[in-house]
Every structure is written in C-alpha cells, then in structure tokens.
Amino acid sequence: MKNQMQESMDTAMEQVQKEVDSGREPWYRSSRRTQILALVYFIQFALFTALAWFVHFNPVLPVDVVITKEFQENKSPWLSNFMIGVSFLGNQAVLFFVLIVLTALAFWLVRLRLEALIIVTLSIISSAVNFLVKLLVSRPRPTPHLVDVLLGANGQSFPSGHVMSYVAFWGLLFSFGVILFNRKHWWHYLFLIIPVLFVVLVGPSRIYLGDHWASDVIGGYLFGCLLLGITLWIYLRLKVQGTWTPKLDANRTLLRVRTHSDK
Image 1 (tube, one colour):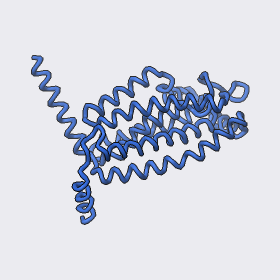
Image 2 (image 1 turned 180 degrees about the vertical axis):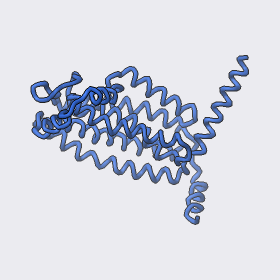
Image 3 (image 1 turned 90 degrees about the vertical axis):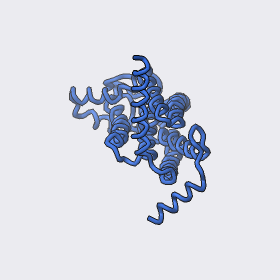
Image 4 (image 1 turned 30 degrees about the vertical axis):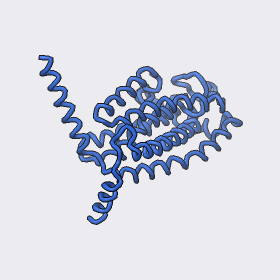
C-alpha cells in the first residue's frame, strides 16, 4: 500500500511537471522580457527618494487628507469588509509567511528552485528594508482627528508595509508568470490575474481604512517596484549563469534565436 501511494504521488508530480514545462517560454524570449521589466522598475528610485525626503519634512499633506476623505466619503459595511479582506494577509504576519513558504515549496517541487529561493528572499528583504526606511523617514500615521481610522495600526507610516510586502510577493509571482510561461493553460491566467488584483487593490484599501496616507501608498509602490526590479535583474544574471538551474548552452540558445527569427 505504501509503495502504491508513493508511485501515485510520483506519477502526479510528473504530470504537474510536464504541464509546467509545456507552458514554459523559450529562455531567449524570457530574458528579453526580464530586462524590460527590470528597466521599468529601476526608474522608480528617483521618484521614491524625492517623495521620502518631502514627507519627512512635511508629515501631513493637505492633498493626502483630501484624498482619504474622498475614499471614505461613501463608506458601507460591504466595502469596509472587502477592504479589510484585501489587507488581511498583511495584518497576519505568520499566515503570510506560511503562504510564502508554501508557494516557494510548490516552485521547488516543479524544479523551479532558483525561483523558489528568490520568493522567500525578496519577501524577507522587503520587510527588513521597509522597517529601516520607516525609521529613517519617521512619519506618523493618520490620526482620528484628521480622517476616519477604521483599522488602526502601530508604527511609522511611510512607506506602506502592506504595499511593499504585496509587491514583493504577488508582484514577483506576476513577474514570474510573465517571464516563465506562455499562457497555453487556464492556470497561467490565474497566475497573472490573482497577483494583479492583490497588488492593485492593497493600496486603495490602506487609504480607505485610514491606516496610511496616499503618499505612503505611492512610496510603497515605488520602493517595492524598485526592490522587485533589482531582484529580477539578479535573477536574470543567476539564470544565465546556471545557478540552481541547468546552465544555458550559448550555442543552442543562439541557434534557437536564429531559428525563431527566420520563422
């Protein structure tokens, strides 16, 4: 019985592996996409630096107050619950970490081991960097006498830790979905749609709940994308060098590029 169960598990893993491999993009195309993504992310750095400097000396911006009041103008129970649900993972550090580890394990089991390592590493680095930047900028959170604080949080405000952690995890999953897969199967689209929804919605949820100013959210997106861009650049270098993955054969890759160009 034990041997039969082991054989069934091995067969199931082989089928999953075949489906993943069938959806993989040729590496010459993937590397080009990674370079484009990384270049876009790097541009965010100058904007983030300017914003961090400005809010350090101007903790409360009138435009932030106006934006939050606009978000909270039409509050309703269902909308409040929805926004709380979007932010839920960011409020549950242990649960979020378990999800990150399980996701990395899934990548590892289908032999995407470099990707698995990067998933965990980026999330840890993002949390540590967010903590340090918050200490440096030292901006207080929104207070009840300025806006409605529906879900209070402790600590400093800039940049949004929720946004940065969501970009680090969900944004990286979306990037891997674009880089690695060619969207031949239905789950490829889920791999793109679900991460996009979390990344896009977490910012508005932080403003609506009164936990962060809009400039905190913008800063979180800018710096989160910067870290993501650096990670993708490192990922590309490691992939080319064959770190934790079969090393690329330059001649075969060049031949595939030429063959693809001739079609």
